[in-house]
Length: 356
Image (tube, rainbow, N blue to C red; front, side):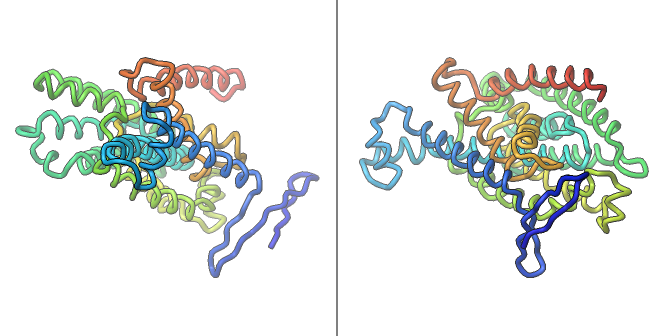
């Protein structure tokens, strides 16, 4: 069926798809943008597989189970996990960023700005560099478990400190920045106490890299990120109401506190698992939702379009590392190099428009 809304003198048509008790508003622009983004991610992913040294026909045979054992091992066990991990981890960071930006009504409220990825990084460094001493327990639960513990613990502390008759967004960002610096300093201290070979492994992970990808590191990301995207899609209507203010959300029958808590929990879990696979790749959670909001329209960044934008950003950065930049440069350096100037430019534009 089709619903028509009046905004000023201009009617806005929305297609409502109903399946039992569930109804979803489908916006044609968002659908088209989503399809284009999905096709771009798929094309870029296949392109990354084909720019290696093996001939294209050998790569194709390896992908479909043919060819010799060594080509299959090089492509299926070597390159394919790298591409899939980059896409799904980028999508996970972007979805977590979209969720947090929406409930906080602040584009700076992302996992890397709120200390969540920094907390996860500290626990992972304990698991990697101190497996035989301080970090024995974290090593026992594995890197994904350590990242989740760090992310969840930081989020709970941040949520408690930022709560005052509701979630105050300014206090949330300030507490998050303080948490980021605290865990960054703690991680630096831990690295000074570790052995040289342990520091090298931990440092590569901290910067954010796809080079260590395998099916073991990919599996948790491959399971959790799609679940997080679906759960965020189911909450989209409630999130749209919360983005207009808690009082208005209550008038629509939406429980802001419960929705905020559930949305933040989804973001923390997805971000923690994504970080466990690739490290805290900077600025993806900040940039991807804002790009998705501008290209797809809407009142809040959509989880699916944000995830696709995040996947595209990470894969594009990996492509730059393999073609233009020296191959030793990890993907996290590229996203940080792009994200830093974009963040400064966005702050300048916001100040010029009187938003700061």
